[in-house]
Amino acid sequence: MTTPPHHIVELRDVEKVFEAKKVLDGVSLKVNPLERLVIMGQSGSGKSTILRLILGILYPDAGTAFFKQFEIPRLTRRKLQQVRRQVGMVYQYSALLSSRTVRENVALPLEELTDNSNEEIDRIVDEKLEMVGMKDSKDLLPSELSGGMRKRVSLARALVMDPELILFDEPTAGLDPVISSVIDELIINLTEKQKVTSIIVTHEMASAFRVGTRMAMLYHGKIIEDASAEEFKNSKNPVVRQFLSGSTEGPILEGTQDAIATK
Amino acid sequence: MANAQADRRNASETIAELAFGEGGRDFLAQLGSIFWFTVDTFSETWDNVRQGRRPFRAASFFRSAQRAGVDSVPLVGLVSFFLGLTMALLTGYQLQKFGTERLIPGLVSIAFTRELGPLITGIMLAARIGAAFTAELGSMKVNEEVEAIDAMGVGPLRFLVAPRVLALFFLMPCLSTVANLAAIFASSLICYAYFSIAWVYFLDLVKDALLIRDIITGVLKSFMFGLLIASIACYRGLSVKGGASGVGTATTSSVVTAITTVIGFDTVYNVVYVIFFP
Image 1 (spheres, rainbow over the protein chains, first blue to last red):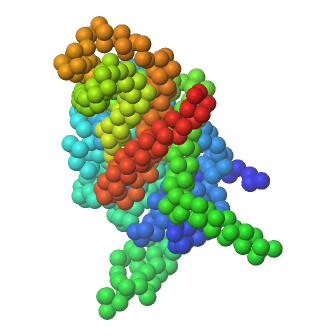
Image 2 (image 1 turned 180 degrees about the vertical axis):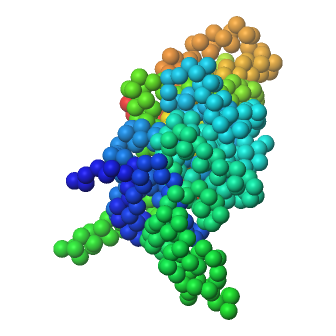
Image 3 (image 1 turned 60 degrees about the vertical axis):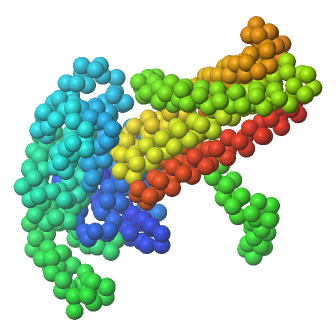
């Protein structure tokens, strides 16, 4: 029925409802290969939901999502698992397995999904940990790492299967500005070196403009602006303008409890 | 037309409520979910086997087996030992009035192999291991670890649930055998000390009384208890919602559900068994 798109990811008129609240209301989005798309929006605006739709962890209530030629909501479980191997995800809170060491965490996808020998797995794990600068912490548990270090391990784990697409959920939230920049640099370097497309969800402006080659703004369940970083900065859209300036005056708070509080 | 359909649905809902009450309906719904959860676990694991890959790593199976099985031996053995002592003592004094103390060995061994061994082991493992499984999987779920595993394309049911369920499934009969032996040994001590039944005579009496059938019933039952407890515990763990308190609630409800289901299933099993093999 629907022809496969030429983009690496495509969302078509996706709607998603959570307990009578329409979080996504007709979102359409195309991601070209080797792009770094930043999706911005307020907290709770459905940014992370978009990532989960692409991974097939959530299903859209209307519309559909493609990864390459695969229509995610229609895949069987086995096919979906195969598709997920080509996608890496870096979670906001890293989501490392707390009872396994850094090495075991990074090795997990290889151990479970490939037939590589132990030496091979060790080699790949070392290589990826080296890339993110975490080789010395191999035998530590996630609880012994700082937030920034966990993010790096999480990134190494996402890279370990050599994915074509990496999804970042708030990669710099809760990190200090310097570490944030380090993580941003890592994202840029790795995606360029490894030829990976990435989708980054964030609401931190500095970070967004550092990493993004394209920006999309999600507001009230719709993509209200979708442009290159330069065009986005000069957008005339009042919502985008308010979001960029961080002002309390403007359409975003209109009629909400917060707007009344500021008066 | 639409009205008639709505009426009919209301009618059937009312009947369901009359028959089981709302709590009963919820309970049946839960039971259904747990059943499908177990089926999903096996089909996901089987999928992997069909692709020519091992279902899960042997190490994770043995880790669960170690925790659930080997580490439970002292507890199960000790509790059954005490129960065996008590049972031999109490029944002994009653039987003594009729001069039939020599029935004690048979009584204790049949009661334990058929019924009490598996049941006591089931209840203890539900509390000891069921709670651990639920809490463990529950906190993994809360920390998004389960979702991360799913997102990698590693099936969480196969990776997390299957080794645990299989470990308990295979170790439950072993543990209830330990329970049976401990109880029979305890009753032999009582028989020797209070009722002057020598070891050799005791063994003869046990062998006379026990039928292969009793042993098979008990073992079959234990397999099913293991499956039930592990499935309920893992299901509860993976359906945790809402942070630390959610893990607490799930753990409590896992233990309660597992114990109730084990006892309920035991009753049904006995009824069916008595009807078909009188």
